[in-house]
Amino acid sequence: MTNEEFRRYGHEVVDWMANYLENIRSYPVLPATQPGDLVDLLPAAAPEQGESMDAILEDFERTIVPRVTHWNHPRFLAYFATSASYPGILGEMLTAALNTQGMVWKSGPAQTELEQVTLDWLRQWMGLEPDFFGIIHDTASTATMHAIAAAREMADPESRTRGPSRDLVMYTSEQAHSSVEKGGITLGVGQENIRKIPVDEAFRMRVDVLRDAMESDRLAGRKPFCVIPTVGTTSTSSIDPVPQIAALAEEYGAWLHVDAAYGGAAAVVPELRGILDGAERAHSLVVNPHKWLFTPIDLSAFYTRKPEILRRAFSLVPEYLRTAEDPRAVNYMDYGVPLGRRFRALKLWFVMRHYGHEGISAIIRTHIGYAQKLAGLIRADPDFEVAAPTPFSLVCFRYRGSDDDNRRLLEQINASGKAFLSHTVLNGQFVLRLAIGNIATKWEDLEEVWSLVKRATKS
Ligand code: PLP
Image 1 (tube, helix red, strand yellow):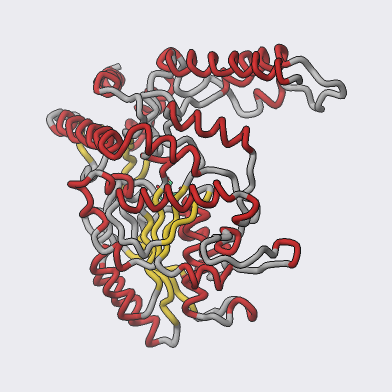
Image 2 (cartoon, helix red, strand yellow; image 1 turned 90 degrees about the horizontal axis):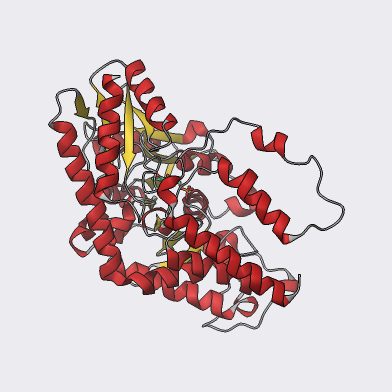
C-alpha cells in the first residue's frame, strides 16, 4: 500500500466509523448469528497473494459487521458498558500509527511519561492521595492478579525464589468478580485458600465473618495475606465496607486491594468521592477507564502505594534490556508481567482533555440519575420488583414470576435486537441486570427498553 492509498483508505475508514456511530441505533444490538457462522463463511486458509483494500473493506462490511455485538449501541445494557467515545477512538488510531512499545522509558519516553501524567490526573479526579503510583494494564483481571502477586511478595518475600507457600490465605466476598479467584489460581494460592466471605442483605461483604475467618486461619497457623473488597460488584454494584475491611487488613498485616473496576469511575464525580472511603488505606486499587470513563477497551488503571513491593515481585532485567539509570525514568516493565506495552495512555489523555472533569462528571451523574429514575418506575409497577439497591447505574430487577418467566423475558428482549440486557442470580433467584454506561444512552432509550420489557410480559 502506498502512502497515497493509505491516505485515501484512511479517510474512507474514518467516514465509515462516523456513519456507523451516527447510525448505531439502526443496528441490532445482538447479531442474529450462530456459533461457527463466520468460521464457515471465511476461507479456511489465508490468501497466497495480497488482496485489494476494496475487497477487504467490502468483506468487513458483508461478513464481519453483521456478526458484531454492538457495544457502542446506546441500548447495550448488559454486563458493564464500554463506550468508544469519539476522542477515545482518535487516540486509539494514533496509538496504532505511532506503534510504540513502552517496555522501558527509552523505548517510549512519551508513552511512559503520558502514562504517568494521565494516571496522576485520574488519581486526582478520584480524590486519591499522591502516594498512589499508577500503571496501565489491559484489564482489571490482569491488574488484580498483579495486586495478589505484590501481596504475596509482601507477606512472603521468599516465594519469588522458593515458589508459593501453602500457608497463604486470601479473602474476598462471594459477590467478588471471578477475576479475583482466577488471579489467586494463577499465582498458585489454590482455591482452597481463597475465602469467599458471605454478604449482607445489600450484597456487601460481612466484616464480622471476615474477622472470624481471618482469626481462625491465623489460629490454624495460616497467614492472611490479601483482602480484596469491591466497590461496585459485578452482579449488583454493591459497595463493600472498605474502611472496616481496611482496619482488619491492617490488624492482620494483609495487603488490601480494592476492586473498583466499574464503581471507581463514579468517584470522579466530586460529591460521590465518598464511595472510595477507606481506599486511602489500600495497598492497591484498580479502576477501568474502559468501563465507565468512555475510553475504548482496553485500559485498566492500577494504582499502588507500594510500588517498591510490586517492583520487587516483578523486576527482572536481562542485559539486552538494561538502560542507563535515571531517577526520573520509569521502566514500566519492572512493575508487571508484560514486557511489550501498548501506548494506551494516549486515548485516555484524549478523553480526559476532551470532556474535562466537569464533562465526565456530568455524564456519570446523568447515568446514575437514569438508573434511579428507572428503578423508581420498576418499583411503582406491581408486576416487577427491584432486586438490589442501586448505588450506581446498574438496575437489578425481576418480573414477579418464576425464574423461567424471567429467563424467557430476557431471551425475548435480547432476540428483538432492540436492547441487550444480562442476568445474574441473587438469593437463588434469576434477576435481570440493566447496566447504564454507554456514552450515547439517552433517557428515551431506557423508556423504550422499559416498555419493551413490559410488553414482553404481556405477550
Ligand atoms: N472487577 C469487577 C467488579 C468487574 O465488574 C469486572 C468486569 O466486569 C472485572 C473486575 C474484570 O474486568 P476486566 O474485563 O477488565 O478484566
